[in-house]
Image 1 (tube, rainbow, N blue to C red):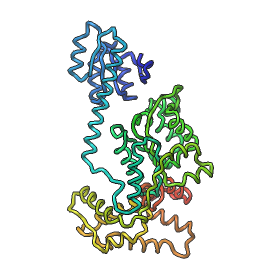
Image 2: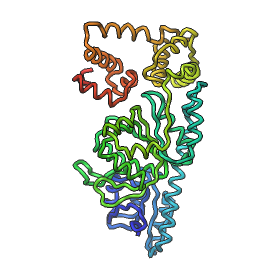
Image 3: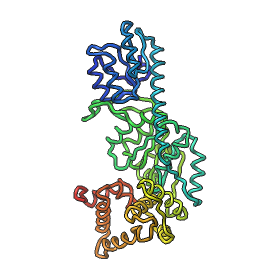
Image 4: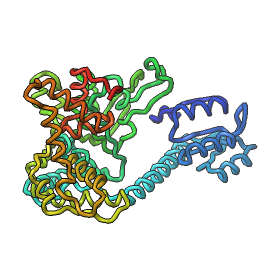
Length: 429
């Protein structure tokens, strides 16, 4: 009955089997008979609520088991129905249980959002950032795929979160996935999910991000790195709102607002046959271009003040400020890592200096320049210089590739390619 109404159902005939299936697939709701061959609904209910209090529970009671059904309500079950069960009554009650569960999660999400300061992607007074803000506000309610372009560290993820927060799906979930460096197999199972036994190691059913984000927003960062074999499946989701789990034989309906981002030139990748033209045109219905920090130097004072306020709060310290000379040094820097690099520089200065006012020497630019001159001597080839620079940055970041990529102003996937090209062994860093 439930499968006919498009529910995804796992069936078991005993308490022990139900325990195992619950741990494996963590369902949204449990529908359980009042009595099972090896126990009662109360035995399962206590374990379900202990593992996940938000899971909805519905008891189907025999006429002689009303006492069990009543106790189940006291112990957290949402409702019970007496057999024989009316189909419409079951569907109505189950739908209400799931809606209540969803509303509880939204309340928890809202409470979580209120406890932290939301990031504003439009901080500053430069013409470039004002133009971006005006364009974003015009398109935020259109609900068409959005492509955000911009260099690494310009704040593409922050803009995507702002679009969701201010768009028509703000009451639904926002999920993000960075596609950089992900293998085809891993990306497919993350997006589409898989059935038990779909491949070696698939010991349980996995729900993909597309299903979880249904009616909400899915943000795919570095979409230019999506494997060519996954691209047509993603296109099917956008055009037909259907997809299929790995190892499954039936399509599933899904409705997500896709926001994609890239630092690459996708039009050039299309020319090179590395990215599908039909997918490119589909995801770029709305195109937002984030300006690099070097094109909005006048915004640096506002950005720096914002970051220092957050950093001071996170460190539990009194407010930290910049001297005029330090601010001038920030505005003279080229910022290859953009806003992300600016925050890292300020965080490092606040941590290492321990002073209330940051001076130019606290920013670390002189040390970087001196180290770079030592590493890149005229006797080195360009390849050797690049290898030394990557190794030094990885050492300073204790082998954390993502942080090293941020400092170098390149994507994580590009850094992985260079690490492999130069034969750098991360375990030795």
